[in-house]
Length: 145
Figure 1 (tube, helix red, strand yellow):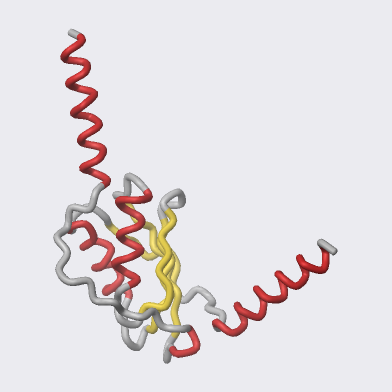
Figure 2 (cartoon, rainbow, N blue to C red; figure 1 turned 120 degrees about the horizontal axis):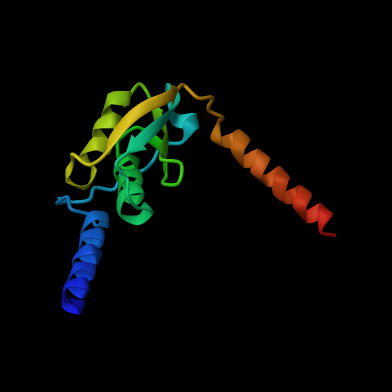
C-alpha cells in the first residue's frame, strides 16, 4: 500500500514538472530588439486573457519571451496571477492575430488560448514614462532627506 502511494506521488510530481516545462522544440533563437514606442508608426497596446497557463515559469515566461521576439513588438508582459498578457506593438508591422498565434504556438502549441479583452489601450511615449520615473525618484529622494 505504501509503495502504491509513493509511486502515485512520484508520478504526480513528474506530471507537474513535465507540464510546466518547455515542450516545444526551438530552432535558432534570433535576437530581435524590441521597439521603442517613439519608433513605432502605429503604437498599440493589447490586453489579452490567456487560458491554459499552469505556472509562471514554464507557461507565462515562455509566452512573454516568445511574443517579445516578434518583429514590431515594443513590450511583452504576461502576468500569471491575473491570467493576462499585455503587449505594446507597432500595428503597422504586427497584428493582433500574430500575437494570438504566438500565444497559441508557445511550448509546442495547443496549450494556450488568447482572447483580446481590450485593444488600443492608451500608450505613453517612452520619453514621458522616463520623465515620470525620474520625477518619482526625485520626489522620493527629497522625502527621505
